[in-house]
Image 1: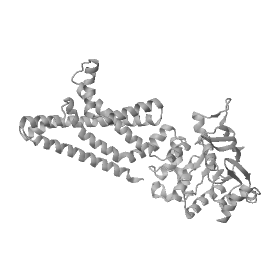
Image 2: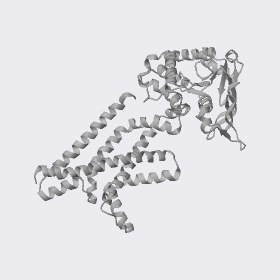
Image 3: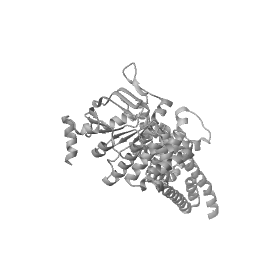
Image 4: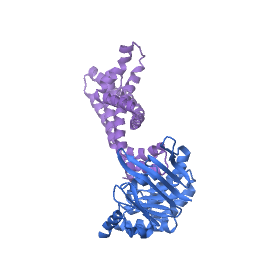
Length: 216
Length: 253
């Protein structure tokens, strides 16, 4: 197999990896925020459920969670799902897992906000929603941005875990080619792909951080 | 008509009774200073008057309209919804540590609430904001961010922010306690200027000489009660042991 063919075949896998990455971010960032906000309300039962959920997501391997989400419906309920479910399963597992981590990062940011910001907003008559969206959240995002970047970089690398349920993203392709052609080259390409991807993530994140640098 | 009427309010945090049966009123154009040792309940009183805390007992009204009144079950009933919003725009509060919004420019700090909360036309608010900035001597700081300003400048912005809401009464919670003597003078100058314009104000302060000079009425609080409420001249000539001891500490400095 020529280098170009290899790149072409792997290119398809790369698109799948990028797909997992983008969809996971798109869904888990808002979901994590919603979870963090609901937790702030300190409703006893709900808070407990959220705590258990976060503890499970953080306490077990993402690969195991992928297997549970993918095989669970059949093993537990004898539901046969079409092949399209493979991608859905990847998304469910990734989004649930990452939302848990993001929720904790948001919480750290929200709880670090000085009470005076809320009080000033209250006295000026802002509603609770306005206070959160206009005053608190923008400052929270600035505070948690480095931690978020960390998590996003981990996500890039974690997309390779989708191979565990035979979802054909880039890493799966790389392994197949390497085995068939007995060459290290696909692993090198995979390595470069992840590195460049993360380099871009770090670059963009730095730009955004600079943009938010106008205040302390 | 009184701008503010507070009648028999009490407030406890758990078992700690911070305000005990406090009553006083502020009439239009009046300047009232509240003095007293730390933990005497001065700040809590302001926080209750501005709905940052809710009282356990008593009534508070602004311009004759109740913000909270006693319900049938002995618990205070607060205004809600639109009425609450309307009530909040009757007063402003200046904090000890400014609490400006750091991610907003000076101009946006001043303009945002009048536009977004009071829904006033942005053009009109902008004009007023620039007038206020000029009054505060900060006309060149409209586009600056709070972190680029000194403490005294930040406090002046926060006064401008409160005034932009066109309140009927302005509360100050130890407005100079976070500032050095030089910056303190800046702020006191601004308050004097507001006094000259007949702004109704309630000032919690440790600046005794300033309070004496600027206020029509002084309230001395200790352990959650009003010990004395009288003119500055009377207060500084008081026979009350507690008052004398407190004021004596300042004379010794």
